[in-house]
Length: 274
Image 1 (tube, rainbow, N blue to C red):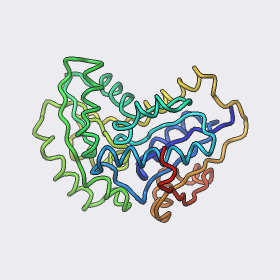
Image 2 (cartoon, rainbow, N blue to C red):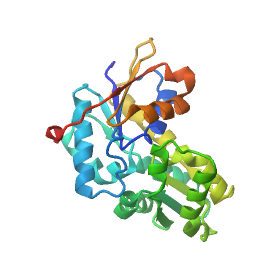
Image 3 (cartoon, helix red, strand yellow):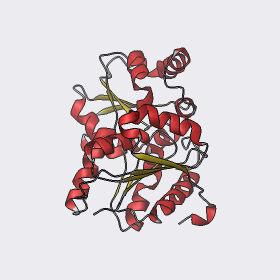
């Protein structure tokens, strides 16, 4: 099956998921769309997130994708069930894989979650965790300053450290927490600093690896794995300015994989809403 896997995100955060998909599924072509012009999604209403997500999905459906990966926690929380119901291709989000990974790592059932306001407000991670393990204790914290910082390309340094330190202060009071879920795909780009602030005793979980593993399993079950021998050329799109998008893509994929990408501007129009 030489059709592509579609990947959507509110901006550049989903590139961390795309990178892991490329690593685990080197024969699969990706078509990625980041809505950088309207990022962040976290402070937006559920209705706005649903509308924008469907506009991105409709754009990718014109590319004849064989599967959809929602590489955005806020969009997963608000649209996954609707997309699964209405699309005739497999759909996966990032919340369930992240929750499963956290359950595997925690030793004392004390799990923290950081995410956007929308993701935390939805309670999706708490629900997913407690559905698997009813006695787990969950502490959630919204970190609204992280996504705008990442979208500007500020991934490290003194400013990033200060913002992350101030934001995570409420979580640091929970000394019993042994596992922290990065409940936004932008946050792995800040993982080193987050780990430094939160301490080495806490296992920091990104859902990217687990999402890629589940994507592989779903493709296999549906007999959709690509058998081609030639390496694919991936299509990456952004709705906003391409300069920072290209810069962050280069830093994530490095030169070895960056040459496998074509990066273009995407024009998403309201009349594409499903």
